[in-house]
Length: 164
Image 1 (cartoon, rainbow, N blue to C red):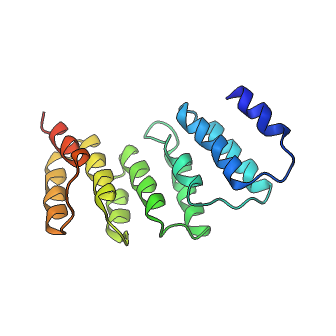
Image 2: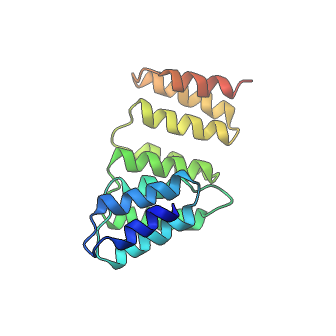
């Protein structure tokens, strides 16, 4: 990432949101959320508006030990930038709250999601499994089927992993 950052810094001031997101994603991939946040804050200082890809890249690295409060602040940014109705962003928020052990908040976001497709169900089911809420995971699976959403192989693997 050091070389990428040097190249990034050499680009003229008018960097597109795509370039900013690419740097944030790079830091996310190497499990360095603090560096990703630093890039994000610089992006805001340059008056570049985040898009629906920015926040999932930022939120990916957060978990209970690193950055729950920062994740909550990013959730506020999602709302302020009007991106809370985008499924991709909702899924990232549900995932972050699940990783942080915030079951109620993850479930609240899931419940207000406008489109709960198989991916969204997988995110909440996997999150509940990670929190060792196996009974509730099974209830979610039943609810998923009642809502006519076809489970994917990811759903089944997640469900089964909690049973063994």
